[in-house]
Length: 209
Image 1 (spheres, rainbow, N blue to C red):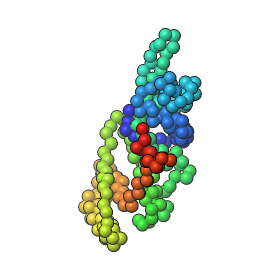
Image 2 (cartoon, rainbow, N blue to C red):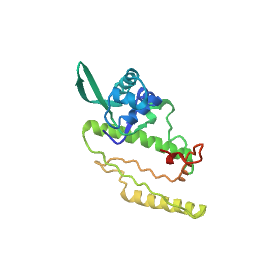
Image 3 (tube, rainbow, N blue to C red):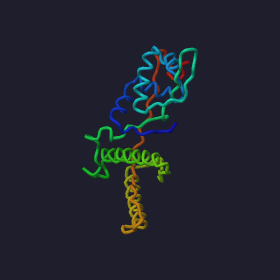
Image 4 (cartoon, one colour):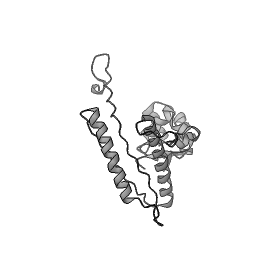
């Protein structure tokens, strides 16, 4: 079971958007059968089996084992990943193109870059898995609090200058055995955490039994 898997197929993406099937995928982080899942999510075993067949057809769940109980064979399944990301490839006709309107100060351009990152890295993971080879990647995730908008602008300018210098130092246009790499840097405000839901009694929901 992978930590994360990228969905490229439009039909598979459609399957995951069904609320019941999404709930089944979450439940199948641990192996389960139609019988155990039916009790867990409150559906009949027949309906659960119907949804499981759709998930299995698109490679989102896989068979772990078969258990024979009398004259019945119980199939135990597990999700292929703990979480899923739908690639822009699934909406190829309307997928964002960062090359269309590059603008370093545009949030939508940053989103287009992120979408391309999902698509390209997802394809690379698929190819590396098929070839049974490791994939060389590197990422940094950090947070910074700016005292003023001027500090933020100065940081962006200094970061841009530093990156240009570093790229110029290591970029080799004519290396015969070289391989091109994609390098993306993004900066955006951190979304505010949503307040906890409050029950009619006035207590936050997360405090309820």
